[in-house]
Amino acid sequence: MKLQEIITDAEIDRVHARANFGSMSNRDVVNEGVLNVSKGYHCGYTQQCIIIEHGLAWPLKMMSPKTLKPKGERYLAALNAVNKVDERGYDLEERARVVATCFFDFQEKSELSIGGIYSKYRMNEVFEAAFHWLIKKGYITKTAFGAHNPGRYIYRGTGKLSDLKRASLQTISEHDFPLAFKNEARA
Image (cartoon, rainbow, N blue to C red; front, side, top):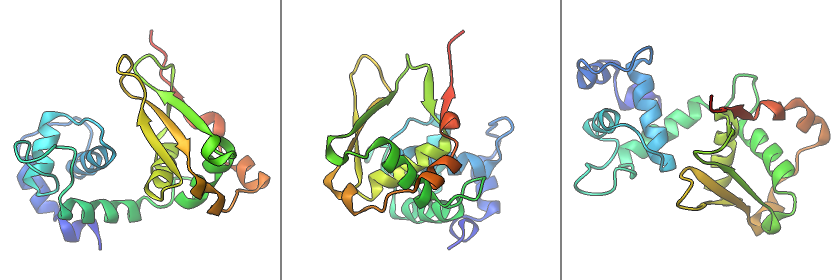
């Protein structure tokens, strides 16, 4: 199913009315909002109102705004199908296998702590999608780490990682690990 079949461009424009998100297209605002809600991330009030108005997430008073409605789940599935291949042509599952091989080779004994407001480096979108894929499939878990540093998470391998085919050294070398993390140093 295509994104435009779930929510038409005309409907997107109608709901947005005069909301201004700078250079982001109205569709991109919805896409980002759905991805943020699906991951449990924060999105701004206006963006939340827009995805709620589209029927993609539960209203703020009924349930947590971090919960997608069935329509939102369908939209997320269509969005993930569109984004399955990254800008270099790598399949998301292949990228996830590289991440699993490099970071979680010791399976349930492996863990990686990353992110947070004091972090100099943050995961880029491509690798974040790979981590999300591994979480969704049950290969790794994600746990918040410390209330004093919001946005920091510990990713832990599970026993299920032994079922995932390891990435070859050649495949690993083709992926840009130095570019896996964005430098967001504070000035």
